[in-house]
Image 1: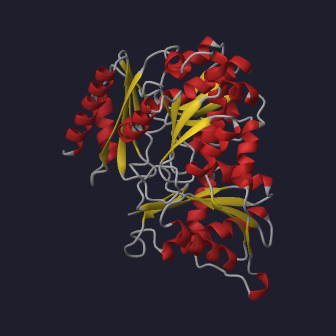
Image 2 (image 1 turned 90 degrees about the vertical axis):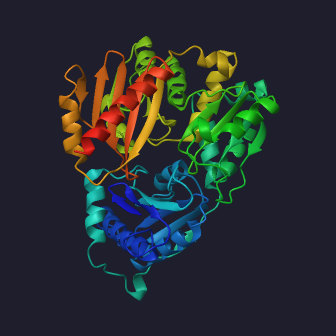
Image 3 (image 1 turned 45 degrees about the vertical axis):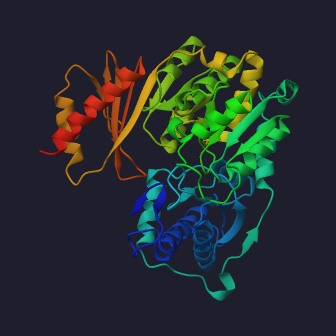
Length: 459
């Protein structure tokens, strides 16, 4: 499986050229990106920052990528094992023309990907991504011997990332240290196993490490969802921890487990952090269309305005900028704090959440009880070989009672909640998200629309 999009190239390892993430495909895409970097930067020999998560395929993908970039006359700063937000911070700090993160995020270990950044350390916009795709289809013009690039291996950026988080204005390091929290961390055997214990120990926490050895052999499905975190929940209770923390393989998604082993709710990661930031710097918030209504409720409580953007980090960041939002992100546990940088960051999110927790003065369970209860159902169906857009149009016609938003897929706002159906940009699936005031109602609502769509797809 190979999926190309404006945000990068993602695929399973192995197979024929053009059918998986093969060396040929990596080189082809790397040369397209190198051509774009050289033309957009105006530099004869620009520099690109590269970092990777701990996936088993990471080293060979990096070798193919870096070799191609150097052959195109692009210098590389190789951070080695890293995280997505670490690379995002490093790009502007190292005065680089761009960056590439080797990670398939929450996808299983047979997947890997090249995620592309511009000089600001943010993901490429649609026009930039389309240009890279177009250039990757052209014959590459490789550099002469005098102009080939070089590679510098640079250690220490994860430490720099932690220091950055601790130095943020509203992170109260001393208050967290004084609390002496005991925290279990599940890093699914990727680079979160390096940076998250580093952060927590710097904050004076006692750390119980769960799947923190960065072998790339993921101990469970790497998406931080309740069904995949039973071990973490059990250990939080057994070890009498104050809370549990789960991050995905590239550390841009963050989820919490309460002291009794219950699920805080990945949708409520952003809600809690936003509540804290809004109490310090009142303003607006942004989340994507598939995120909980609870953020809007909390934002309005603080006197701000909430904006719902199209799904995708680049769209959320655009909306953060256009609305001057003080906090934003995605309901999948992605916290974007623009005072730090405009990218999802579990390190920054953790530092802010822990400050909020110790300032609040109660337990994680008590903190969660402060927020309105909306329950979300997240389902999906395999992308069929039929006209999905036509089926969605028929589904809209079948629901005149709904307020419909077609900015990104189709969202049905109903009296009892909402349903959002959209084709994924990263997997061959249709995502079916629903939210209502109970788990049963959300599941039933999403299930009803899923079955209606399936029926329409068969005709």
